[in-house]
Image (tube, rainbow, N blue to C red; front, side):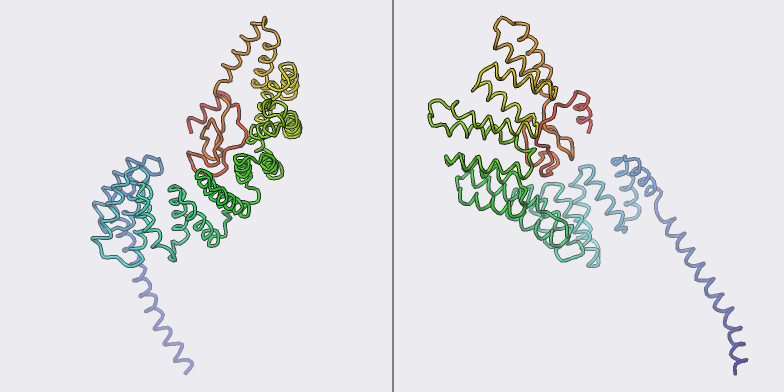
Length: 405
């Protein structure tokens, strides 16, 4: 029996070899057929994409899709290109046509809805986009849907929904959204402050600090509320807490602190009597942190309360320690006030002031957006806390580079 078994295998092995050779030939022929069925414009479009020539790539892929109307992948590529080039109406029409006129599997239908939802989002049709993204929850696109829903609620300033969505996304992805959630609560508090709903505003700010204990904005707003209610001692206490959070932000409240210290004066008819304690506090901050924004407030307060001579000394000390055009401008201003006959000093001061002009500004770390005043959220890229709290005196070269971006 053993000998017969070996002979049978000798007869069967060539048959297996022949069948394998035939199968391989069929696979090769099929591969060649599939590659040759792709229109040449498809490869032309790929080359244009690599070269970042998106509008020309649109034409190439449009021609490729005309020659191969059943290719779902070509539809997706072309739809993405339409969004990239701002032709969202064509992208919407393309994907709606797929849903209405093609027989699709459930998975294909879901994939097309993802594309269509992105079309609506790009076009600013947030209600339609929201409806589709909500329908994509609990699918394999769940996290992508959550991220887009969060973007929608932020753009529409629906802060309560943004909090809920960020919390869900945090739970789903494992990525922290504590900083963003705290900012959403601050936005809710700011809206409540406009309506003078002080209790609700304070509650929102407590939630902001619970979400992110280093949320500077929460203490800024808590101080603002106390100041508006006439409790300046409490306002100052809230603003002082910023030193324990992120001291670089103290410059944002320096002027407010000095004003509240002035208001605490026993003699309200002469607010200057309340300035010494406030000036001493700012002197301390400046010695420790050396922030240009605090120096500006300190100089103006010193000039008002103690006169040009003290202000000149302060500006000279700062200029020696940390040379800047702003400090030079302050020094020349004080010197000119001390001697009315020194017209050359006034001329020099005006020259320096013209030189620094609008150069001092806040520049977003994410996109380079230039702002004359501080924003908690960048108006250009919507990133939170991306603008440094201290303005920078950018050079003309820096400004030109940022403009090119």
